[in-house]
Length: 152
Image 1 (cartoon, rainbow, N blue to C red):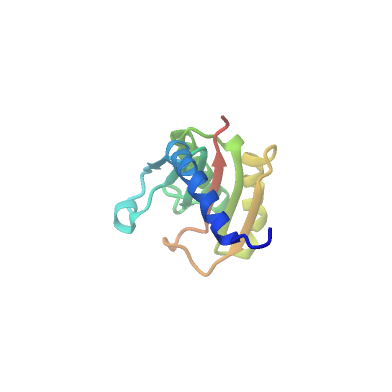
Image 2 (cartoon, one colour):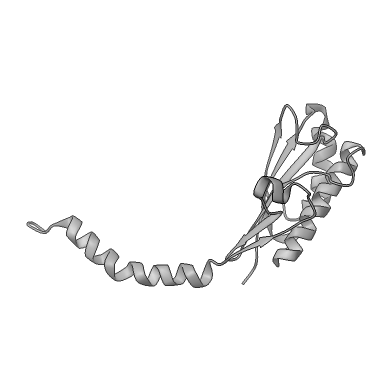
């Protein structure tokens, strides 16, 4: 391909493909914000979950309503709230492929892991557990994020 301007060929190809690709994104990649019950949503400017196409991203979810409970109950509450958000977005716990757990105490890892296993033992998503200095509410010992898909 001597003498051919490769940049020109790339630009010409993109000019043909890009409008089709953009139409596909517009029709398949719609965004829907899913509200929860957190009083911080309008203050901070976030949604409990965001659905984009067939993917659902659940925000960090603290144990709202179980603030003074032990870490086992707090973890269960976080995952129950996540389960409700997924349902509102059209997904479910069974379709979670990624979780992130933020703990304020390293010694809580096993109790948190057991509750996580109760919810995800069969699904076994990619998961991360991180120890952090503190969470938004000082009584919280756990906060969890989750990513899920919606089967077509």
